[in-house]
Amino acid sequence: MLHAMIMAGGGGTRFWPRSRAVRPKQFLTFSGDRTLLQSTVDRIAAQVPAERTWVLTSEQHRGEAVEQLKGMVPAEQVVGEPMGRDTAPCVALGAALIARSDRDATIMVMPADHLIEPEQEFRRAAHAAEQFANDFPDSLLTFGIEPTFPSTGYGYIHRGERAGTRQNVPISRAHGFREKPDLAAAEGFLASGDYFWNSGIFVWKPAAVLGQLEKRKPALLATIQKIVAAWGTASGPEVFRTEYANAEKISIDYAVMQDAAKDGKVLVIHAPYKWDDVGSWLALERHNPQDANGNTVQGLHCGVRTSNCVVVSDPSHLIGTIGVENLVVVQCGNATLVTTRKGEADVKDLINKIKAQGLELFL
Image (cartoon, rainbow, N blue to C red; front, side, top):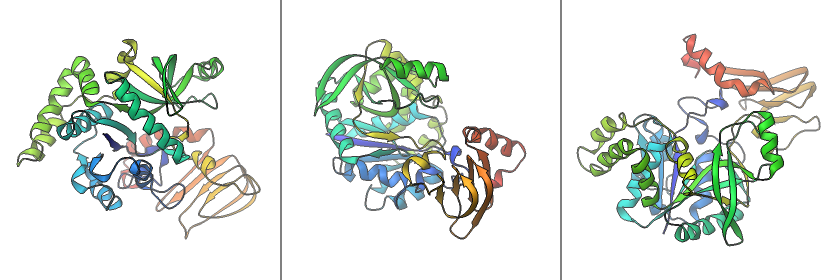
């Protein structure tokens, strides 16, 4: 049976100042009235019932996740990680917990902060992915997105020969992964037609991913197995907190996927839907209408000779602009970001400087 595991533990720093430590971006709305986390659960709910859905978030934000998902995901299946350890420990924990009740499960792993449309195409792909996982039970499956421009902000998957088709959705061998490239390399990837964007959405059997972790990261898996062995017992919370701190902090891409691809154990599904990881403020332009001057506005804005700007504010806070273009202006509560469209990619550098100056109050 298909199970869903949703990773909702990121900090969302690129969306500062709206995304803050107390409420990062997965708990916010960016298009429509559903938060990114709620939309992720909505997307898979037709195929995966609540009792087979798990959400892994931070301990700090578990209460927020439980509240947002009331009636959608059982509270006991919303897990709060005691500290961030990147995606490999998170994936291992989710797979091991699901395997307790269904060792032959098919698990779809999804980040909580993506926008995908149309949803019926995602559901078709999810159906195909479940069938592919049964066809290739020893393999790790990931969704690849057909690139539409030479992005330097996404990782890439080098696809190889076709391996099958289900629901009119193809799947291919994955020859390897490439991290975020420079522009020349990205243009080459796009021109070749042999590369997908790496969406970070995975499908696999518990035995497949846990077996790869045992092969490549045995100490990490042993740590997770101690946690799961104590799960639901009186000592479980303390074991979780103590042992999770010992887990290696590493992404699933570096821990498993890159080397597994070299061994021919990774397959890439050709995603038939549009995908956006909502990785920056400029993503608002792709999911919201623009005014006559090309401005994307969420909130109150009055502009004179203002064009091609992204402007975001609290409902009661007016932003006025005169004679500017290609800016990103975001006001939220006690902080405001002003940058050029190009500079917007360096928000993380600003966050680091705010920390260095002892201004964490504004994060």
